[in-house]
Length: 453
Image 1 (cartoon, rainbow, N blue to C red):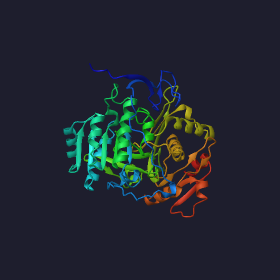
Image 2 (image 1 turned 120 degrees about the vertical axis):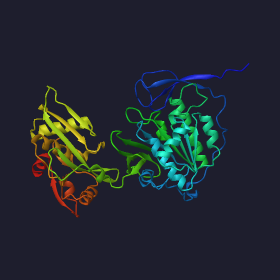
Image 3 (image 1 turned 90 degrees about the vertical axis):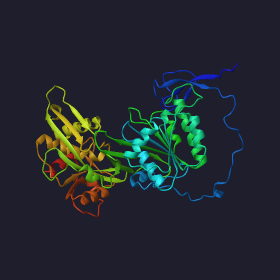
Image 4 (image 1 turned 90 degrees about the horizontal axis):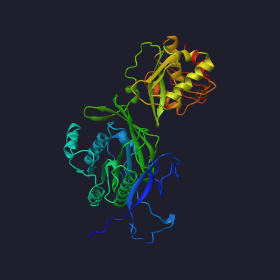
C-alpha cells in the first residue's frame, strides 16, 4: 500500500510571496490587502540539501578572476544588459502579451549562437513547429540552438544539468510546474520554487539564464515580488502594439547601469535596432506651422530623444470637460491644466483637452511639462509654434519653471537634428558654457508663453 504524500496548507501573498499559516485580510510583510492565496505543499521530512560548514575566507584574500562575458552583437540589447552577458547571470524579462518578448529572445539566441555559444531554449507555451515557423520568419539559422517543449520543472532540471550550454532561456516562468505542488502553474509557490531551482543551478553551472515573465495589469511581472530580488537583472519590454517601436528598459542590474534603454522597431522580419530614435519619433514632424504641435527634448535613461507633443483644445460639449491623454499620465495632465488656469488665467474648465505623444511613446519625465502646456495654449489660441523651436522644463505648482537633468545632451541632440532655438529653464541656462543654438531662458510659465510668440 502506497503511503499518501503528506501535505500542508499555507497562504502566500501574491505580491511579495510571504507565507502565512492562516488567511488574513492584510499581508504582514508588504501590507497589501486581499492578496493571500491558499496553496498546498508537501511537508519536508528532511532538509533539501545536506548541511555542512560553508567555506569562509578573509575578504582581502579572495582572488578575483576577470570574467569574460558574452556579447550578442545586438547593440541595443547588450547596452541594457550592461554591455555583456556574464556566466551565471540571471535575467528576468517582462512585458505585455504580444509585445515581442519571444521574438526578442529568439533573435538574441540566434545572435549568441552565431558567436559560437550553445543555447538551450525551453518553452512551455508553444510547440516546436511553432518555434520553427517563427525562426524561419526571423531568418534564424538555429545551428547551435536546442529547443525543448516542456512545462515540468523536474524535466528542466534534468536537461539543464548536463551543462553543455552557455545560455538557457525559459519561456515562460509562469508555465513551469513542479510535481511537489498540487497547485497549477503560475501560482506563487510554483513560480518561486521554479525560479529558485533554476537560478541556483545557473550560478553553480556558470551558464546565463533568461526567464520570461508575464506582467499584471499594473505592468509588473506576475508572481511574487521576491522573484525580482532573486535575479541579477530585471528588464521590461515596453511599447504599444498599435505602434512599431519597442523599448527595452532595465529596472535592476547588478552588473551594469539601469540608466540605459534599448530601442527597437518591429518589422516583418523581427525587431530592428533604432540607432537614431529622434528621427523615428519626429518622422511626421514637418516644417509647416501647426497649432498645438511642439517638439520636446526628453531623456530616457542616458539617451536624449526628441519627441513631438500634440494638443487639441475645443469647447466642452458637456458640463464635465473631457481630459484625454495618450502617452502621458492623465492625473499629471489635470494638474498642469489647473496650474495653467490658476497662474495664467486661461479658461480650461470650459474646454475639452486632448493630448498625445506622437509615435505612441509613454512619457513620465517632468521635463515635458513646459512643452505640453505650450502646446495646449497654442491649440487654445490657434497660434502655431515655430517648428524649429524646441522646449524643455518642469513646471511647479506656483507656475515656476524648474531645471531639468542632462540639459547639455538635450541641447546637442536638438542641434544635431537641425533645430535653431531652445526655450529652457533659466537655472539651466546660467550654468551652460557651450551654446550650439539660440537658447532662451525662462523662470515661469507666463514668461515662457510670452517668449514663445
